Amino acid sequence: TKIQATLIPGDGIGPEITQAVTAILDHMGKPFEWDVQQAGMAGIDASGDPLPQATIDSIHRTKLALKGPLTTPVGGGFKSINLQLRQEFELFANVRPTKTIKTDGRYDNIDMVIFRENLEGYYIADEGYMEHDGDPQGKVYSTGYNTKQEARRITRAAFDYAVANGRKKVSIVHKANILKLLSGMFLEEAREVAKEYEGRVDCDERIVDACAMQMVMYPEAFDVIVTTNLFGDILSDLAAGLVGGLGLAPGANIGKDAAIFEAVHGSAPDIAGQQKANPCAFLMAAGLMLEHVGLNDEAGRLKKAVIETVQAKDRVTPDLGGTGNTMSIADAIMDRL
Ligand code: NAI
Ligand code: MG
Image (cartoon, rainbow, N blue to C red; front, side):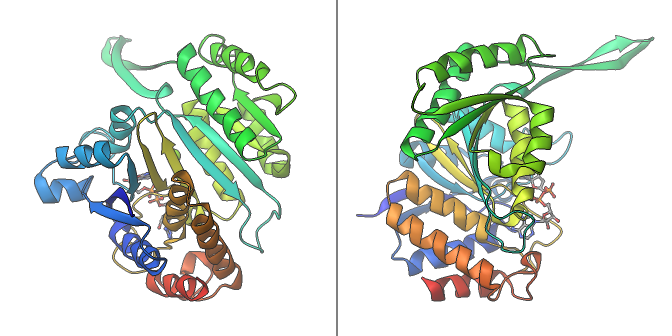
């Protein structure tokens, strides 16, 4: 019995990496039965809507989606589809595993998982203009909020993950010394949740700026990290950089009723349509999706094939130092499978 899932190819390099990933999954025996839907610029082209109702309905039905990158125009245009999806499906946790893959990277043994709160904080972009010095738009403001409920829910998700995956430590990352309420409450609630796991999972606390430095200097000291939205956004890209960039980094958006998996990178308009895109991050996202539905053996096989291909530099894309293309690296992965 196949698992029903929504597939959104997305914009820019999205269709190319989707082709590679579906070919590889087909080769593995098609664990998912795809309901292909559009979003982003592709949604506008297809039906005039960047987030068509059919796409929303599909995810409500399957509760599982693999989503390609979506182009978000800067300024005007429309509200980020990724934000809309997070809100529609209450995707409260953005989970980013980061593990050393490349053998020639700066670090050898990085293995951390960041749990980023995905619905609140300094990321909701509730912004506006105010008068300043006679200019009605001379001042801008942006507000954020955190709730006790979400602070607890994301922290619990991080600790539960640590328990389920044999992880030793969770680091709570905050800026409570300055943002005494916004970040302070998050820290307080996270501490309360941490107490429930005492003796099972260690816990430490780090201030976000110092944490950024420590992640670069001693990345192997990190295990699971839990933090608020904006800090998590920044630190998880930093983590991706530590292991060789965005070409290999997957992410999961986990909600109460649905989960959406994606690559961390965007639509890469600079290389779109040229078969230069590395499909591995999107493929690793499919791997997280296999784990999510309990197909751990398949997930393990897939990850192993990707890692071996990348390490052998077998037919890899230019970002990995090769002269191959999107489909040649996919072929190399399929050969190993
Ligand atoms: P980007 O991640 O698309 O590209 C940054 C750089 O990395 C570019 O030089 C690109 O060529 C390269 N790159 C990215 N993915 C690659 C891959 N798989 N293989 C090889 N090289 C790769 O970030 P950028 O340029 O800031 O954003 C482009 C668009 O993507 C924007 O509209 C942005 O809003 C959107 N975006 C969407 C995301 C999503 O849907 N989850 C996440 C991040 C950005
Ligand atoms: Mg980001």
